[in-house]
Image 1 (spheres, rainbow, N blue to C red):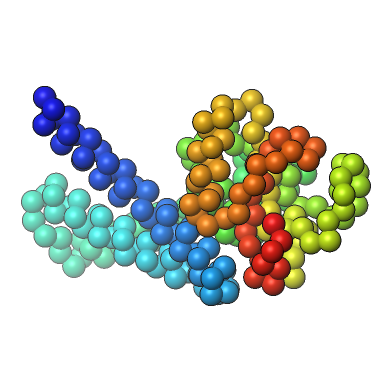
Image 2: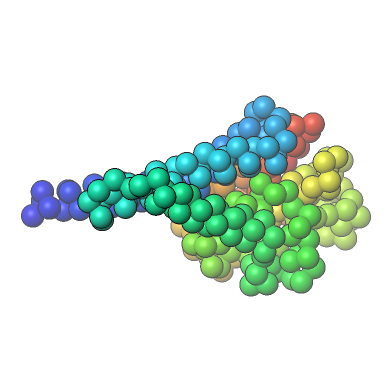
Length: 219
């Protein structure tokens, strides 16, 4: 029995890693190229989508070989490549340009989604597939907004639109969620290379930001 359970959990772990790996490569790789080497985010995403394309294609060919019991032909591989491209296109379009109203505190916040940096958008669009209760409470701000909230106006805030035209920060609601879920959410963004900060301000929330190379100390 112990041998069976050990093998079962080993296979389960391998399958989990296989599922998680493409998302990790895409998001973490893109953030790494942007923050560490100052690649244009578009080039970084394109490069990582290319890596994930070949990774998923290998998955599909291996699965085909395992199910059918013979190696895939060139025609079969081309068909699989087309399927992978379609899936990646749909995933990219969904995460970059779509935010359901249930994940935004207000309609105004939902409208601000397209002003959020694409790397933050693709990270949020990915995690909402697992966390249906995720709620973005704030993204874009102006200096006057801090006065309205009764807070000290910040000189440099990644909530402000930066020189590249994008907002590099967002706040996520932590209220009415278990602490375990909040910690998992924070760990996810941290592993993907984002800055994470749990703090008060107007209310307890999780602050997530993407480092802006020209303001490396701002969060």
